[in-house]
Length: 96
Image 1 (cartoon, one colour):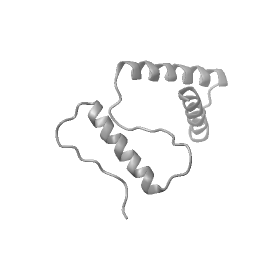
Image 2: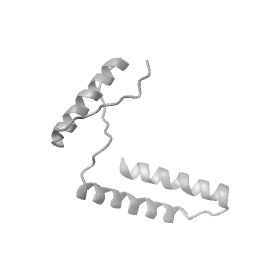
Image 3: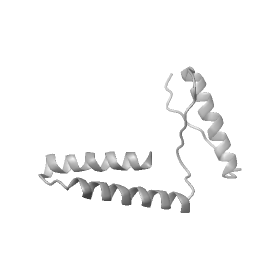
Image 4: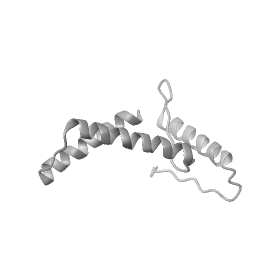
């Protein structure tokens, strides 16, 4: 997935450079740049533990409320895995 996203991002960036600056790279250059970025990303993540964000997939249909509860549960698990023993504040983007 990392390879796909970095390739798409590089093509999108190249498109913007062409539209706004009149500059465009060859397809091979874009693919090489995407490959290097993807490799750097993987190496970085091997050397540095991620501290923020998360994601995943759940099979089946669930309500918005269930999804929020699952996200909160997983956030609490991550805080435990990181050995955070101080006060923790969990925020959501929910207004209502």
